[in-house]
Length: 227
Image (cartoon, rainbow, N blue to C red; front, side, top):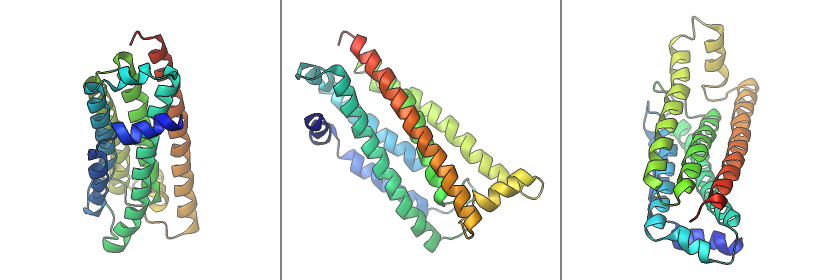
């Protein structure tokens, strides 16, 4: 497994991945949809898989003395590493945003700890669709990316829309007022910090469960394929 993961980072990973990490700087744009950089990480993973497909990475992996399940597991571990690196960069940029901008985000959720929960949600949706669809063929990365991108943007706009609505109607709804005072804000109080940590933790668990189930499905599909 160690050698397979080494292959993913040394032979498969594209330089574009590092470039797409820089999109986390979009958190310094006032009044912006701060989950968009998560989509670009998915794009980086797609580019890596696309180039791998052109270079017959799947066929090469099948010629190695390893099981198909281990090949899929190594790919998932690579994807998880990329996503967690981006999530870690988000943590740093949230603090930078607070210091340099420090004002509410009118385009969606604020740059606050709860935003990390949104990142986990977007990554979970991407993993649930992109990788299983890709492993149905082993080379149609574009088709898998289109399906996953549609789902990611649908979830993103619903997620951000909830916080836009909460900000617009906080004075008319107790629920929206609670969201604005505990989740969609910089946590000035212990109550808000606790709420955001629970919020983020719940989505982190969702990410872990969805990614694990996605891996099991992808491994099952790939083992039954004739590739």
